[in-house]
Image 1 (cartoon, one colour):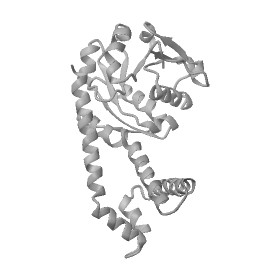
Image 2 (image 1 turned 120 degrees about the vertical axis):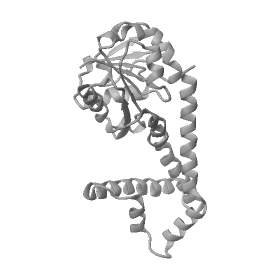
Image 3 (image 1 turned 180 degrees about the vertical axis):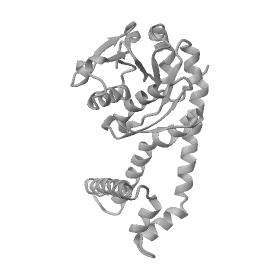
Image 4 (image 1 turned 30 degrees about the vertical axis):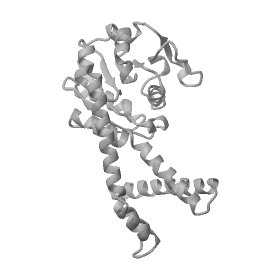
Length: 276
């Protein structure tokens, strides 16, 4: 399988590294397309891939084309490479807010279209990628797409494209929510008297341990809720109970709901602007 990645920034390169590590393709079967201002990677394994800067027809050789440019750069990318794409290729977009209908309007010859929303964790092959297949994707082609993203973590096939913006709000932006929580806990720890270094260590190790514990319990039970995990830590009228009660009174859960809606609405705004 030959893979063309148009827009070889952080996410594009992460996916390239994933499919190489997963032995789905070899370095020689990948072509990375760059803006003229971008620099080629100089380390293994990407240094051994094919690299193209500026206008080129190399994309026509690919079986799968990954559109990994920024949404605002999509039209320019179509001007450079659109004429090289065809109906025989699987075209996968990881652009936020760009619908299949918008892609189709700019690449009318392409029919096998997929939208996906990998998150930052694909850079360490621990990502989650929700995706949606167009009606023209065959079961065989769907397995190819799933296989690509499984090399970078886990996948979720969405039943409707309308859920793509919601997926971006939850898992796409999700890593930032956790880091925001960690930053808040570290700041709070410092007000209790800990040095920044100790505050970092306490919060960092607590977070990693919590994730590992939840994963271990999930693998045994098949599913386990965060509430059940909290109950293991919390004793009635103890310190954890006092903290959780305070968080409840502060409206933290409602704040997260509002934050998710803000991300969702911004995604819809980007979707609208991409159609213009």
